[in-house]
Amino acid sequence: MKPKVKLAVTRILSLQTEFTAAELAEALNFIKAFGLDTMFNTSALEKKKNGESLASKPVGNAPSNIKNGSARILADLETVDHDKFEALSQFEVFLRSGKLLSKLDSIRRVGVSIDKTFQTGKSRKDAIPRLIGLLAKLPLAEAKQVISRVSEEYEDAGMLDEGYQNLANFLLRVKS
Image (tube, rainbow, N blue to C red):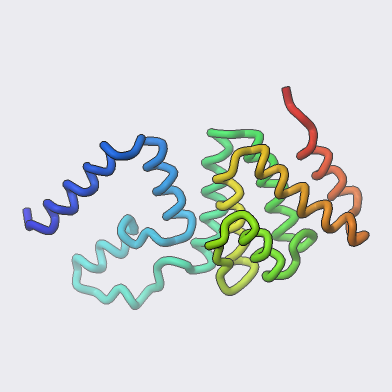
């Protein structure tokens, strides 16, 4: 084994002593959700092994990876926290349809209000999964509060219809 490979193995194994399995899994899901995981992309590894250029096919922030990232985040939430999954999946439907946060700048403002380092990407299509990922990291109560705030801003502007009211009622309902 090459010295650099040994070093990589020891560093990866040292992460297990420093963090819990759940924390490492969450970190990997975050990396995969934003398409930052060129290391775990097996087709990229095969190309590198065969000596082909990795530039021939883009890996990373391709729009298909981003949409899949959002679906992956929600799928992970469905098994872990069903209430948060319900809230975020309904919110995502409203975002994708343009009924809420119809401009990229409005998504950026909400994201930055949660995390100052939030980056939207170049389009709404890029920004929506990133915002969903950010909300998924928040506790359920905080995520609902952000969603309610976004819904209320539209209500104040006179843009709330029955669907928005149903979403707001669902999110504000306290489950026991």
